[in-house]
Amino acid sequence: MKQLYTLTLVLLLSCASAFAQDNAKIKDIRELLHLTKAGELGMQAIKTSMESMRRTNTSVPAELWDEFEKAFTAEDLVNLNIPIYDKHYTHQDIQDMIALYKTPLGQKMLEKTPLVMQESMLKGQQYGQEVAMRIIQKMQAEGKLPKN
Image (cartoon, rainbow, N blue to C red; front, top):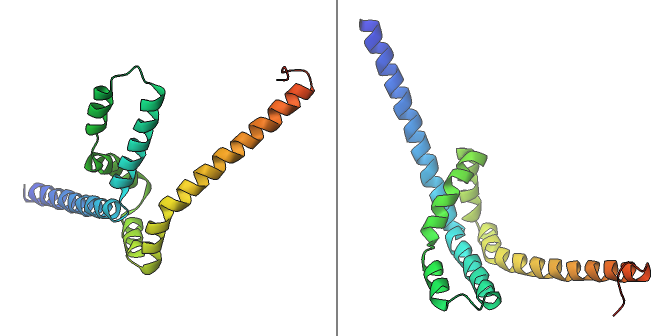
């Protein structure tokens, strides 16, 4: 009977230790996501997307878009991402990223990444338009599309 109690105690302690480690990792993931302003960046992306949808779907009442936009919160977006970070990164990875983002280089990365992403998206759109024009011109030359 004593062995059963010892085994039960060992199992409980190991479960408690694993739970504490998981809690510490989740706490650190939350810190990382707040440090990187993941929730705020997600909200900016949602707002931009909403503005675009409002312009292209003018028959939808503005009140619906307003309510839809209010339904999102930065904290909800952080919470949605915690399991993803937990799945793909070890606790040490998360701690290393936190350490990086607290350095001057990490702070510069946080400051510049939205600008780099914005410029990259713009260049990607321009490139896509150029490729589309080349394909259209080629297909017109081959008689597969009518010329304007």
